[in-house]
Image (tube, helix red, strand yellow):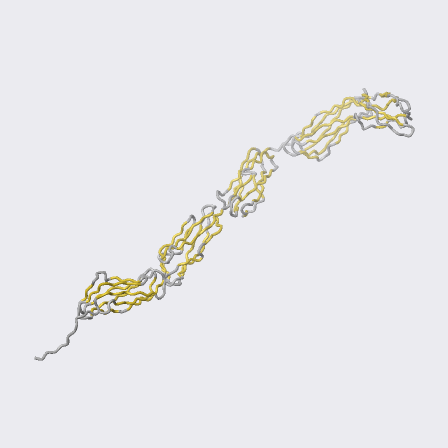
Length: 508
């Protein structure tokens, strides 16, 4: 029986499928994987002793139990992985398989590129500036994925007193180049500087993305000066006014939207609403009290505005008084005593408005022989407590006693007002003053004599021609008067000396 055959050496053979792996593009933070099959195509048992990956981001799993034996014709699989940590183009690596097969170690080449999302905000920060307390400021912020891989936003929060955000629902995925918007809001609760931020959490590098926010709360503050008004006493039919200053002590514009007055007799002028007052500025208006009747009255002014504590109340008060018109004389009678015929005497009476309303004097009349009046005319108006002086002169024409009166007619309730007058005349008695002096030791042509009614002068010259002796009699004096005399010496060239010493003479 013929026999034949070919002898062959027993040997394992390692076959790899695929012999190289390309992961394509893998997003940073994620993992690309591909299955690799190892087959023993030889005729002896294959023992894989080690599997070692190399290259940044490359790895494998599924071959943990090494050494691994594959009988002839047997296969196994594992997974090659690529987990890039950063964006890179054309990353390379390999897996080295050590076995008892010929050509060991076998190498599986690995290639791949990584993609990465990048999240940015526009604007990167925002200052709301000045925002009125009680209102809000808003601003739109745009989020853009400027990277090469999708970005998933998992959370968005706002921090800081008064700051909030709307318009962004999470989770949200932005593909490469895609944008979305959110609205940041600042609602200040007090007049002060505030800081906050919007925080965006995502799978993009640098997460969370912080967007700083700031703003200043501003607020008007209203104040009145005076804070209350007391008009004191005002006569029925009259009125009194008071200026009130309203100041904005805050940091925002003050708007007065309404101004109302309450209380009988009270009103206001000079404030037109709505009125706007800039921060630090002020305006004025007038409060008025025009009462009727009598007794204490009260009211208020209410200013409604955008300031805290609105409305501002300004209390008003005053007392209404019944109008009174009274005219008083002081003294109520004038006695001139005895006055020489040919001369006169002057006495005064003071008329005073003792009421609380103006008094109008319509006429002044006088009767009685020798009496005349000056200083007061018709239609003279006296305000409360105002006075005027009435001058009455008595110039008797005879030696008998005379009586008379001054009648003052006005709109006062006690009109007419009468001032009684009395006096008597007498024949003047002739008096004289005899003067002597010591003669000058110098040669003189004569003397001049001067007289005054006030000590120290001024003096009036009495003699028209020079007196050549040291005596002189003044026959022009009047009873009851004191006179003051001086003399001078005059030489032949009409040069006059200074005044002599002064002497006085009182005429009885």
